[in-house]
Image (cartoon, rainbow, N blue to C red; front, side, top):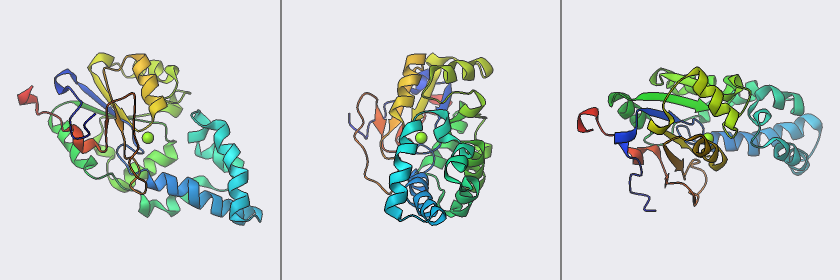
Length: 228
Ligand SMILES: [Mg+2]
């Protein structure tokens, strides 16, 4: 589809539910963390070359992809022997919102809609990031999949999330950069789904198929309530 077009029918949206990493915040931080910093420090700690460290870590990453442990700081501290929470803080200067994201959050709030964050990030990670960027106060609710024992890729997350925070799925817009997560949201019945096609400013944009996609949240400008 034309990436300049706004795929959202705002007249049908009461709840705006956003992913954090790669949707509101630049995924460059996370990719640097996992692809560079963790292998470097793992190599140092275990007396390996960087290449050896990458080879040891790769299957460990694959094993838990799209499951809750993948997103769990404590799990990775145990597996690697590195203090993950401390490492994340060490490079916090790299945490930042994607261009236009903060304006989008303000625009949603100004339109009177509910603005919720739904993240797979561990509390150590999301609280550090939202504190660092000063975005905590902009969200009416912050929902973390670790509190529900299932990641956003899993139908149980959506059931438990809605049981605790009732909303009308058909009147919700959900935006995420992960296609498996968007598929689970679609299966659950979320009314409008949008993929972010350029979640990491250090990488080229991706081709997204199966969902309407925009490079940035700023392409989804919400209507003011008066214009509904
Ligand atoms: Mg994400």
